[in-house]
Length: 234
Ligand SMILES: Nc1ncnc2c1ncn2[C@@H]1O[C@H](COP(=O)(O)OP(=O)(O)OP(=O)(O)O)[C@@H](O)[C@H]1O
Image (cartoon, rainbow, N blue to C red; front, side, top):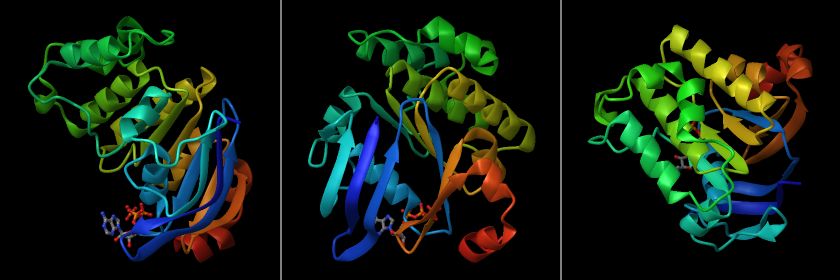
């Protein structure tokens, strides 16, 4: 297992959000997480990646319990979190942003190079000389994902990768995630847009009241409108 979460509870000061979450993710799996607003999806990603410190439970990443580790140590161990398109330097060009990420992780086994990601993201290649701050929302999202890949992650966590993007760009991001899945990457995708999750993930967890209510394949869940209505109100 790349990731094993056992009995994880987490929240903010006295305010509990995650309640006794357990889940597993095997190498090469793409796991989607769905749930209503505020159910704790982002908090779950942050509890895995370090910014939110769990109250109890274990997060085994590659067999090691990383609870209590700093965010940077967890990142060094091979976990990349793409959240709010953060991690882009606005004054650096696209190419400089990519080269910087590659340089910071040059000691790791190089699964992705700057050339690889430019090939994978033709839109970024076209905009390679543009400053990060001058990119559209979709381009920023692609740059954030490209930078995360240059961290050579064993596990990629994506929070709302298609939120607020124009339909054509959503299709491009979905297509990209499908290619990453085929490449054997392991990832968790949180998105409000059901189709993004269904089209990119083999399996989906539906969260309710701070904990997984069910886990199913995307194919099965698509055919269960009553479950989607109960837990997601759609
Ligand atoms: N930094 C914070 N301090 C206090 N409470 C927070 C903080 N971040 C989130 N919360 C609260 O924790 C709960 C879970 O938030 P979280 O962002 O994990 O939900 P979510 O499922 O990702 O929903 P959304 O899709 O709306 O982001 C919400 O009630 C939210 O208001």
